[in-house]
Length: 118
Image (cartoon, rainbow, N blue to C red; front, side, top):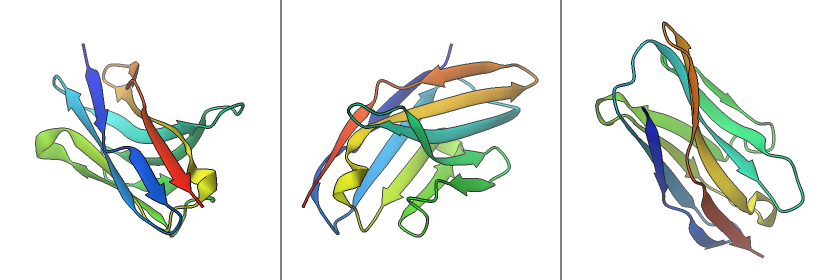
């Protein structure tokens, strides 16, 4: 069973930076995708950024050029560096792990609050 533990959320001013970290317990192998989603009050959860087991990355248009996702395979950790933060980035951020092959699975972290003040 995989568990995801997020850290690094908090309060930042507009234009500031925060870094989120997600540590996965257990052994992760095979083809998989780790990513970050966010959900603002009254809105649907949306994908922010993802990184595959081969290192390919994908970003939502709203964060391109500001956010960077990376991973430390040795530590089973994925990081989200958030720069040039905007008030509209305020949301609960969730870490996600999708196992694709040879086993499948979909896991979520508990979420971490990010609040950006103007």
